[in-house]
Image (cartoon, rainbow, N blue to C red):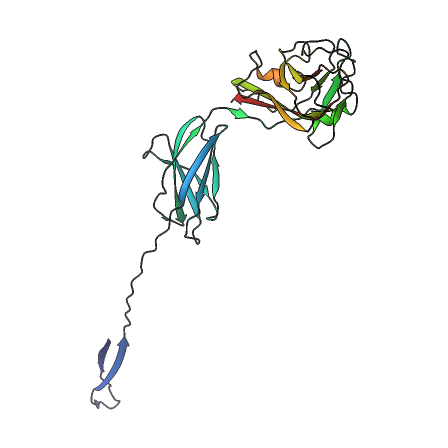
Length: 308
């Protein structure tokens, strides 16, 4: 729309003559425009699920279809369907997993997609029960020594015993594993070897030791007789030993044998100081009714389950 403005001016001439009025015109133009902006919708992630382990919730989901979004907000509650508080942001939007150190309990999670100040609706809820214990990774030894008295041939794993400290296919070898036909772990006729220096990483503030798991990877030279791998644990540098746990060896192929477990304390109450490298030791006893049998050990690992 155009508006017309009119101005009038009077010009006075020298000599007293007055000229006729002159009219001057000026046009002003004002532009107007209008438009509408359709509101966009951010899509929430889908298929939110989770598992609890070692004091943490591990969450997975299918990413939002809004690929231009920044990422996600992660919300947690102790009550299903209500009371959520944001605990993290997760980027980029292509991410499909996150870990939340929630602690012990059952926790309820939802997520939403965000872009700047815009957010999507919440995802569906995932309920995640989280246990209060932590299990370390398996650790190998750094030191070893044969038991040299009342222990069969008194030479333990006489060939490359340090090979048992790492699972790499290199073998510690105990030839002629005893001096008699006893099949008992407690027999003085059986070769014994001690391993230590396990950096287990249990904090000194741990509230309780829930269990100790030993994994032995190895084999035997033949399937004859009755054969067992026996293990004892020490908490005072080898001064005192637990009652032995044993596992039958029934094959001459490389096999993983597990003794103890996440809830097995080997008959005693442990404290974190018992598990430091100077105090904690593992003793292996090779038991067979065939004293000439050879035992081969690729790895002797230890894992500890504890309450933080």
